[in-house]
Length: 376
Image 1 (spheres, rainbow, N blue to C red):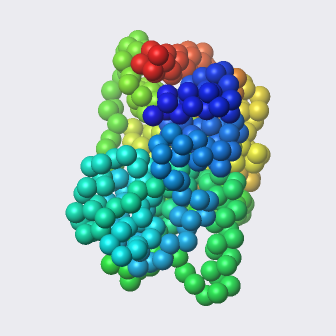
Image 2 (image 1 turned 120 degrees about the vertical axis):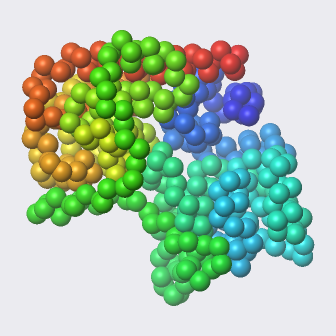
């Protein structure tokens, strides 16, 4: 559908061919739907995108704010399992008709199963991805994917207004403990500077699969990068190499004005809760230093401001020094590579890590090329 949407937007002179190509490249790196990427890159407004998709699919689109203002009795019609499986939100009931907001309103399998399970005649409408993920979290407590932290500005404003209105009237979210299907509503993850008097305790260790504790050569890593099938494969391959060599390593994604935790390793294991890290790129930190300079950072991490949030998510012991390298594509930093190890002279590791990062970037470029071959 991405190719058809792009063609429609170009035909109607809403974007250029060059802008579409840039957005498709970014989609390979960051994931998500093309429309979401176009909104994040400020190449198109939400309203124009909704109109274009409605025209293309011949199905109406949920209006801004509608997905947040749904009553609990309607939400309970569909279980969290079905909502998450098919990315849908029940919006309204009229007689035996159920208006259903869907990521893919042409998914007949989803429509048939939901109709059978609920007993209603499903009337599908389109829901933009940037809206749907926050509605699923609000009504069902379904945690949004990493790349959707935080919400776009317009969505954030609507959520704030809705929350303020409910607080004033004494109302609560439609997701409550008493609801038959529902869990706790998801909370908004917006950064606020931590208490600088102490480092926040790391979350308890989870039962997670241990990374292979074996020597992994750069040659083997390069071969694995040639064979990757997606961006997460690139991240897994890189962190496997780093985790076998350094006491602590991490990869960050830089998207939508945020730095978010992507992959991590500490003593051969993923760091529990690391993917919950999210910091604005505007907040002063060593991460921002590497992003702004588009060059490596080598040295101690100051124990202040946003750096404290980084240190707390990396866990104990606090790093005495760290090495960060930006991953730069499409003219901007799309990721960050991080290592620290008290037993290693990190300056001697710089050349090796620069070579690794260049190979990782080439792997992403290969993915972009593969995607272009498949869609042309």
